[in-house]
Image (cartoon, rainbow, N blue to C red; front, side):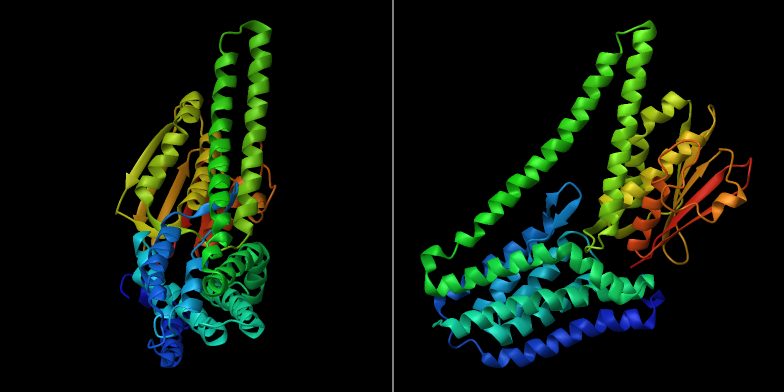
Amino acid sequence: MSGGFGTLSPRLRAVILGVPALGVVLAAAVARGGIATAEPWRWVLVPVCLVAIIVSERYPVKIGPEQKVNLGALPILVAALLLPPAVGPATAAAGVVAGNLVVGRKWREAAFNAGNVLVASSLATSIGQVGNDTNPSVDARAALAGLVFAIVNLVLAVLPASLHTGRPYLVLLRRAAEASWTASLSLAASAVSVALLAVEAPVAAALPLVVLPLIFRMNLAIQAQGKANEQLAGVLLRRAQPASGPTEDAIADSVAEAERMKRMLARLRALAHADEDVPLRRELVDLTELTADVVHAYAAQAGTSGVEFVTELRTPARISADKDLLREAVANLVDNAVRVTPRGEAVTLRVANGSAGPYIDVIDHGPGIDDDRLKNLFDRFQRSDSGSGLGLAIARRVVERHGGTIRVQTKPGSGSTFTIELPAF
């Protein structure tokens, strides 16, 4: 638990350690059911569930342009309902630990997530274990177990975010529930159906899993749509190049307006995604690589404006973060910096580690920000002379969701320095 764990608040440290401890206690109590009555076919589920949990962590899928879903709840609940009481919750927790480490999460985060699953799956096992015989009572208990699993998992998952950011727990819980309840209940219902059918009608046990190929195809369609939009924008720009005179100006204005609207819609989607408060899709992110990606993306815009990029790597910095969201936050700061920096000047991106954790500076040489704008600078639709007024609001929301802070140092006529400070956890 080194590398910043000691800097966390006592209550947060207690939760990070206490939830896995509670999970171990509950799993030990449930394990009294033993393994003697297990049928041979049930043991096949141990490696199957382990691999399924790891794969679902490694390859999350999208069910909307900006919304991801983790399918790991399905094999976790199947393990809890069908495997022996001494094995099911342990299998689920082991799969979560392995999956978390595969995607680069820290040990303490993996331990908390595994503890969360251990608590929820142990309760599910004690409520709705599916034995050799089924009846309406068993079916009802299995359904209740799925519901309890979904609720407990969500209730515990929101705790660290609330303690780390200082935001009200009930507010975060409500928002997370509103954003995820449909996916959570659907996965729980599928898992319960698989468990019951495995005993009542083994041949039909896999039928509820027909939803997985549909989700996969939807994921591919969403990705293809994004690529098609990029290609269409490229075609429009190329077609505008041969024109000349008034026609060229008209086409250029139309393309510029289309690009502006495209950026506006993308930022509205990003802001909606940041507001959802669904669990972040964390992975190990190298901040140097992330800033390099952003610089590459804005190289053409900077070149057109006559602005150069300067990057400073003071110390290597890696964090556990939602890469897509964090990149959006940095990109919005860079977009603003390029727009306000005069031709011939440079925008500097600095990556380093501070006393509280890693940070990113985005430094421009623009006109600075007046004092009367500073108070509401990060509010939505606080539009300057250019831009949509959404970029800074998105950046603040994303950073806050990661438990960090964003601030600005500025002086009229001397440029501005925006700093994203991120926690080591």
